[in-house]
Image 1 (tube, rainbow, N blue to C red):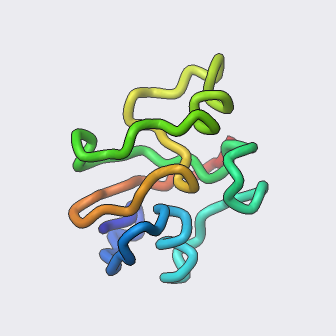
Image 2: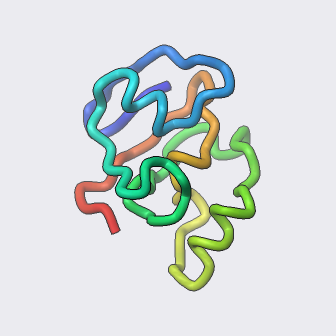
Length: 94
């Protein structure tokens, strides 16, 4: 998978989240709640492979309700890392 704006492609481990993948590869990605899905600081924008994503989890649905997330905006702690997935890390976490 690839992280933007770093344009860094990294290997994934099946069953890992995007957040876990970023941290394992030393890609800076905010995560105030420690990856529990209770903040929104780890949000990312999916740039490629939107059609292959796992559905939003109940935890993710609860946290984004009323926040106006775009269809391609996800919490990296709740998003499965996939081959070919490209995500953009915003410059300012919420």
